[in-house]
Structure formats: C-alpha cells, structure tokens
Length: 74
Image 1 (cartoon, rainbow, N blue to C red):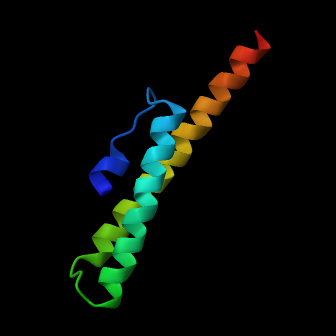
Image 2 (cartoon, one colour; image 1 turned 90 degrees about the vertical axis):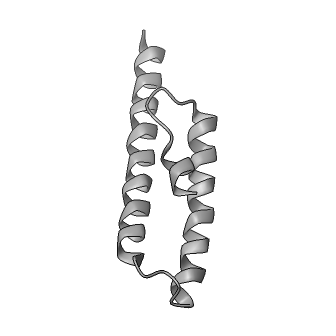
C-alpha cells in the first residue's frame, strides 16, 4: 500500500493523487490493526513513511492548485 500511495508526482493528475490518498488511508487502517496486535516490529519507520507520504500528497496538491490559479489569471 505504501509503495502505491507514494507513486505520485507533480505530473500526476488530481484523480491519481486522490486515489493514492485513499490507498494511504487504507494503509493507515492496516497499520493500526497490526500495531494493536503488536505484529509490526518496525512500526516507527512505517509511521514515519506514512507521514512523509501524506506530506508529499499535500505538497503536490498545493502545487497543482497554485498552478491552476495561475492559469486562471492569464
């Protein structure tokens, strides 16, 4: 799930980014289950990866929105 969620870039469409965000949401749910049952020995690394991916999504979306605003002004 994390690889799929991380597979977006600034050239990705809004639909692709939203799909990646949904996959990340599923990964967070799976993470919570595994963490609750103490089945995830490297949980800190996984949690950091999820946070980094979430920040990446937010950054890319903000860049795309700014680009749309610039295009509307011209």
